Length: 268
Image (cartoon, rainbow, N blue to C red; front, side, top):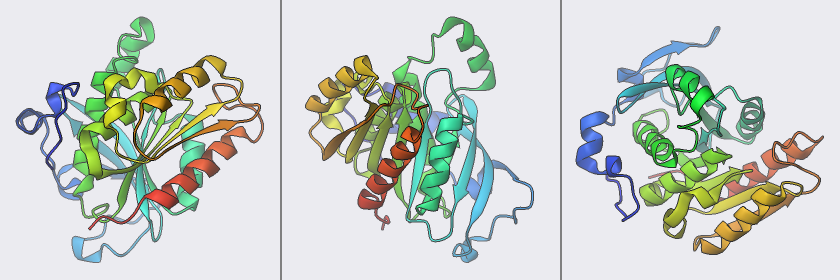
């Protein structure tokens, strides 16, 4: 997969550097996998029309290996990669809840950890990695490169769902990967942290912010003005930053599902 290059783009995303750290490989053949209980083994390549699937992945990303959970519902229209927020992980209950609704809407989901367990432990004290958008976006782009050519997802449109700082990572990776990314949704995100990359995002982008999350709403409004792609800003009534108020997270999931259904198309 050939990655674009912009002045702001992290050096690790260049073709030669990426190949040195992480080759785009067939996940079914080269990644370490363990199936969830009661889930059938992965089908052979010639049996790719037999969904659904639920697979635990160990994904090579440069010098580290990241854990992920891939869920492909029957007749999936697209695949949404989740970029979790600061201090969170793939087990975020909010992202898990949104992912379940997206699968019901016909989207495959990949929830994975942007940091290793060792990095998470250190970051809990120092918080030096959770705002390292360059690192997070590089890893998201590398994981995307690992998944796009795999037989399980080869024909699925690729989207990003980013929360908090994961929203910035998703936008920055989307800018670097160009037309590979079909849509982006940010939930309570910090798109301002994507910096100059905002102007290069081509994927249709939905920014979702809680009405009571006033500081983040202001940052999203400012970032929104710097974007030149198809875009929308949705403000969820009565919601604060974590969308813990009754019905607000369900509204986030509904908005996200509609956005992905509208913009994700099968890849040729």
